[in-house]
Length: 325
Ligand code: HPA
Ligand SMILES: [Zn+2]
Image (tube, helix red, strand yellow):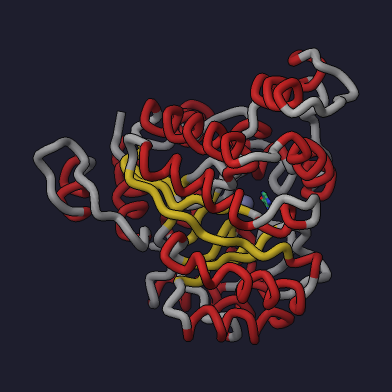
């Protein structure tokens, strides 16, 4: 299995039905059903919002530091099995604060799991764009005492109607704090959202970004500046951003010379972890080993914080690239 970095992964989206049930029992939280198969049968989505509704509903079971620890530890175990050498992990503090779970609990559990995990990993704090810019700024300020526990900020949740330009100020504050900057753009929103993410938020990577392909000038900009895109093929199919994997634009993105990476987004909900995404691209789209190796190399180039080793003998990301060459 090729070594890779995973750069687009929402930790709350790794909450498997089995863990939903276990944590609900532990925290004495009532669920509509405790049947794992019945929970899984609800994982059929028509668009981003239909997924987000369930994603936020299930978070109710995350209450204690131990819950966040168990969630992240389970992901890191799965990631290691899938050839992940480094992960940059999104989390949604507002989705927990709004339920009365303090930042201390979220950071405490996640940071401890990352410290104990067998894979190099770092956290990226995401703002929920549908909660507005003022709240985003409040959350960032509240998180600054934990500045050493996260490497960057991102922007996620419902995209259309919440353009990146609304978040100019909070991204400026993040930049002044030396935080990396990414944003979901061009998943359901158009190329204009990707332009705004680049020009106004000064993002260093674009999450999803598949609709950038509708604008040749934008494609040229992404290529020339080597701005990575964190594409999530199985997510795009499940949320109907593309009709099927066979129709996915990812091979064309690679042909355009874009720094494309492949990631799992919310693997518990979308039918596979990161290697499952790579395997599906090979199986359904006939992508070659050479193409997939290039994508894996891109993932190390696109990472912010890779410091680990890939085999025990390779000391750097460039050596990791050698491995998949
Ligand atoms: O794919 C996504 N898009 C936007 N917000 C999200 N939050 C979790 N996953 C996603
Ligand atoms: Zn995402």
